[in-house]
Amino acid sequence: MAKKKIFVSFDFEKDRHYKYALNMWDKNPEFEFTCDDRSPSEIQTDSVAVVKNVLSRKINEATYVIVIVGEDANKLHKDWREIGYRNWQNYEIAKAKQLGKRIIAVQINSHYEYPEELKGVNAVRVYSFTQDAIIKAIRGY
Image (tube, rainbow, N blue to C red; front, side, top):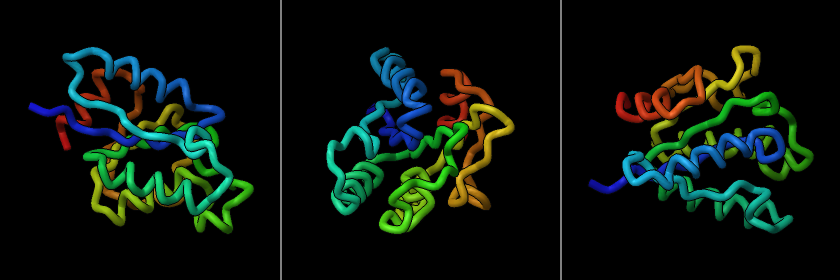
């Protein structure tokens, strides 16, 4: 059985260690999914149009979108007008909704605000960043 492909939406500055943990789990052949994505900071361009294009393609290729709801998940980005959303995470969530992707929201801390685009979405909610919790969310979708 092929592994499910995951796109991870996260704040690069504050939450990239969660994405790195997912990448480490992915190296285990018994783990049920593979992470293949790029954050806007990893795309290596200042062009919002190029970043949107790459992110849209990666989200389209994914089966699931895991949203890491960290402290800055709803913070206003300096290029928000050009992005068309508060920040890149909100753009990624909106694109995932548009493409009909399955969304799993992993809330790191109960005090962190959900991104605007995630509010009112039929997403699976996870309240603990553990392999077991995330695998359970994927299996239960």
